[in-house]
Length: 261
Picture 1 (tube, rainbow, N blue to C red):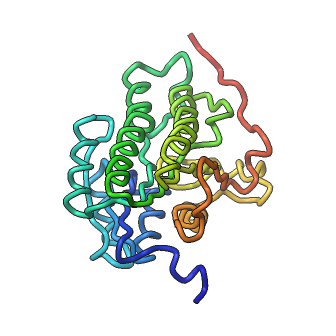
Picture 2: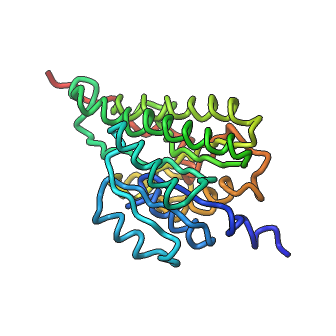
C-alpha cells in the first residue's frame, strides 16, 4: 500500500478548522473531508460556512459552527460543540483572521481593530489549542495542530496590528511545539504568500515580484497543509514553518506608507 494512500485514520481522526468559511481555511477543511476526516467548519459567517459545508465532497462528514472567536465565550462554545459533535479532536487548524484594511497603518488603526486582530489570531488560537491539547493528553492520544501565520510575522506589512498578531502566532507555534511534543502533539505553522483568496485582494501586478510568476490560490496550500497535519506523513515534524509563496519571500515589495496627519 502506498504511504500516501492513507494519510489519515478515518476511523479515529477528527478535525476542527477555524476560518473554514472562505479562503485557505475553507480549502484545508474541504481537503480534510476529501480524505475522509470528519471536520467541524467554524466561521464567523453563517452564509459562508453553509456554502463551504455544501461544497464538500462528503457533506455527511462536514459540520458547521458559527461564532465570533474574538469573544472568549464563543471559543468555549466552539470547544463544547466540538466535544459533542466530534468527540476527540485530533487535528486543529487555526486559519480565522479578521479582514484587514490597507488604511489601518500605524497612525490610523484604532484600539478596537487592534484588539480584534489579536483576539482572533493569537488569543483564540492559544486558548483553543491549549484546551484541545488538554483533552488529547488526558486521553493519551496524538495530535497535530497547524496555525496559519504570515510572511509578515517577520517582514513589516504597514499593518502593525496584523503583523504583530502573526508574529505572536509564529512564536506561539514554537512554544506549544516544545511544550506538547512529549505528549505526541505536533504544532506547526503554514506561511502563505500572496494568496488570492479570503479577505486578501492583490493587484495582479504583484505577480512580477513572485519568482513563479503568479499569485497563489488557496488550493496551492492544501497538499502541504494535509501533509504536515498527517501523523503518518509528518510524524517527526514539529515547531516548523512551511512557506508556500511561489518564492515571494525572496524579496520585500512593500514601500513605507505615506503617513498623513
